[in-house]
Amino acid sequence: MGECIGRKSIFITGAASGIGKATAKLFADRSWFVGLYDVNEEGLAEVAKEIGEENCISSKLDVRNRDDWKTAIDAFGKATDGRMTVLFNNAGVGRHGWFEEMSGEDNDWVVDVNVKGIINGVQAALPLLRATPGSRIVNTASTAGVVGSPKLAVYSATKFAVRGLTEALDVEFSNLGIRVTSLMPWFIDTPILDMGKAEGSNEKMSDQIRDAGQDVYPVEIAAERAWDAAHGKETHYMAGKMAERTRFAARFMPNRLKKMLVKNLGPRE
Image (cartoon, rainbow, N blue to C red; front, side):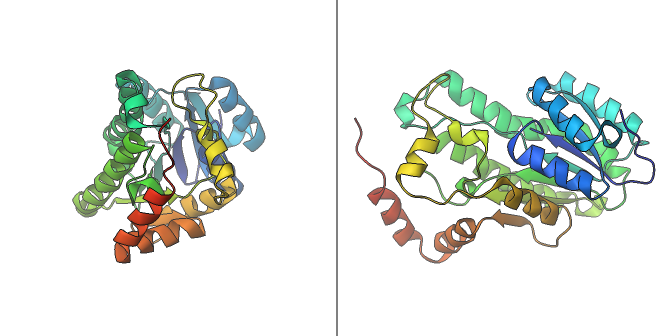
């Protein structure tokens, strides 16, 4: 375990891969102390090795489990002298397919990780954040939190929830000196694009994205926007040009956007 003497610190969930991993590397490269947390312990070990054990602390964390959060936050606080500059609530999961094909258990899993996981994180980290001048919470939402996304209905609902929670807490925590922002990526080249209808499904969202010729952005773009979300004045930070275009269309051309979504929906089997 490294030490955080004189350095800013960031606590990252979903740090073993994708946006979390890229963000951990970027912040470590810029001299931050990084907390790495995920259910994937093997992946965490690889990230810790890449950024240097002296620059991080890591442990397994299931964001659905409040006891896991308490253990992780306590250890992080000991390593950082009771401070946390940024909480990056990044862990997220999804299922892709027609609504009637989703099981209740899968829906519970998506809601529990994507929404309850963030709420648990904010509650657990708030004492450290309050003790740190200029602290900030960054929540990973999605462009699916800007426009309701067919065949991602429950996932989309969770990202709208993250967006609403972010906006509410940004106001509520303003007199605590804590900013709350969100990262809202378009499709990013991460393992979540391999989401299927069910565990072990061969029908992946990534296949449909490729077939439709849609843009997929490198993970480094999202990491740079996470940096912006940790430092900038805005509330929501879009990652990828298509994310910006979708936000514009949702605001100014909602009917046209809906017609495009219906056109691209495809038939039920």
